[in-house]
Structures are given as structure tokens and as C-alpha cells.
Length: 223
Image (cartoon, rainbow, N blue to C red; front, side):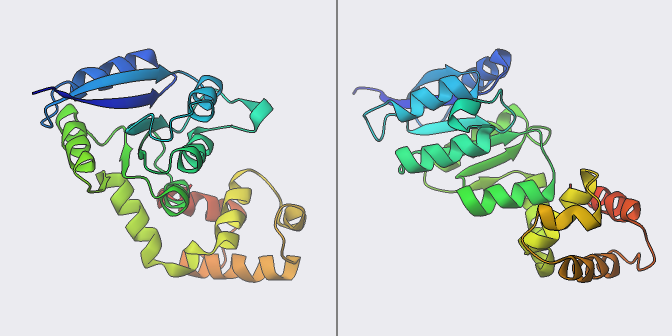
């Protein structure tokens, strides 16, 4: 009986990580031969995704979020590549592997991409990656511990799911002053001030400064 082949695209700017993933997946329980195509930046991944005429060329795509950008095609991260995969290869399973643990970013990717697998690199062992891969190929979804915890915590505090609250906290962390925020967010300064007051109330720092908001948001793993 012929061994089934799985075509896997692995996108990571560290070749050693790709070699490690390949080695781990060779121990899969699916009786499959894994055929891996590597990509080390957004540019090479872009062409592998968009120039392939076969809509199911890859059964699975592993994507790291932090990658050298491809500005010519407005592809700046693994998040942008995941959108491309969803567009060009709708039946392909996406597994996000990332070092990022910020709840806002994790939730945004969870909501927009709905990856079949979503793992924070510091969470998993070789065995967990193998377990995740086996489950995903059998039609299940898999989130590692930090992804699960951070997304659930954010969803439990519903007002923080509002894009404007997330943008205000993120802009503060980037050093943008409140008076300049209407240049970045499509709401009025008074609406921004009201939301900031709500954020302070939620963080129990009603008399706190912008720095206190940033400190508390970092402590809670939001940014």
C-alpha cells in the first residue's frame, strides 16, 4: 500500500527551526510521508503561495509571525501571509507558530484567520507539536496554553474586544499622545477620552497616567 504524502509549506526565517519541525513531524502517527517546502521570508513565501496553480498544493502551512517583509506586495508579517493562504488555498490548514504572547495580537489573528493550529513557541515541547499536528490533520483545532489563556481572558472582558480600546492602548504604548490619536483612529478626541476613562476604571487606576495604563496592559499580557 502506497504511503500517503503530505505537502507542507514551512515559513520561518530560522532554517534551524524548520529543520527541527521537519524532524519532529517525521514521527507523526498518521503513517504519512512529509514533503516539506521551506520559505525563509515573506517574499519567497508570497510567490510559493500566489504562483502555484494548484489550489490544494499544500495540505498544511506552518507560519511564523515575525518575518522579513516584502513591502512591494504589502506583505509585512506572517499575519499577511496567512490571509493570502486563506485567499489562494482555502482548504489548506494553517498552523501559526509564534514567539508573540500579546493578547491583542493573538486575538486579532484568532478572529481574522481562525487558524487550525495556534501555538506560542515557548509553550510547546516536541511531543506537544506532534500531538497538535496529528489532531489538526484529523480535523480538530489546537491552541497551546498561552494562546488559549490570553484569548479566553480577553473574551471574558468583552469591552476590550472593541477595536478602539485596543487601538488606544496600543497607540499609548507606541508613545502617541492622546491629543494626536484622532489622526490614527476614526473617532473624536472626546470619544477617546471616554474610552481612556473606562480603561482606567477597568484597570483600577482611575487616577493613573498614560504610563500606568501601559504598565498595567503589559502586566496583563495585552501588549
